[in-house]
Length: 287
Image (cartoon, rainbow, N blue to C red; front, top):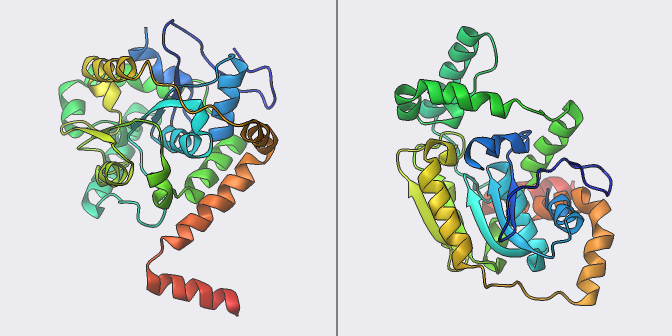
């Protein structure tokens, strides 16, 4: 189905019980959640469209950045926060090592040639999982290609990822936060999960040592049990009621969410630069 408000957003509404909002990664549709499931203003708009004031928010990969932004800018919308394979962004982001990145790219190219189609298994799953469960990998990957975003959306999402940097604001997260990450994640190294856990108040960190980026697909039952227990454990929590001015501010800010968020995050990213680099940036600005 699609949202009533514009621009139209596609969403899938299923199940009953505690409201849980699942936000996918870069250019990926909600179909990626199908195997394991019998941008912040947009996330808030989905909740409003379904008549929900708040929900437990789960963000996967780039979706973790959206979930984190929602928790920071609209805390009244988030009952609890679950960040899977995410990071805080900015210049201090932990990047893949050269050896791991090179090996992943070589495997991605070789697999794509062999299958005569894009085959991103090497950056989504751990080496061990791909070796032990090739049939499951082949069954999972088509879900990543369903309802792919059009080029203009992909470009805007890439810009959002490039501008995202919330490390300095992590201490302001109010929602109880669970961080789930794969120890063999090549796309977003596990050091990013530790950065989140160290800075978000009372955050709970779970690292699955043998898993890659797509932790819930490599360990569906254990992940489902962990997330279900987390939601049940925080079912009684309700976020603080917003003041009237905050409700109005949210509604007014939605059409300007992308440029406002880009400026805010870019500003935070600049402040996180090493002092030497910041001096260069300020010097160039003066000239």
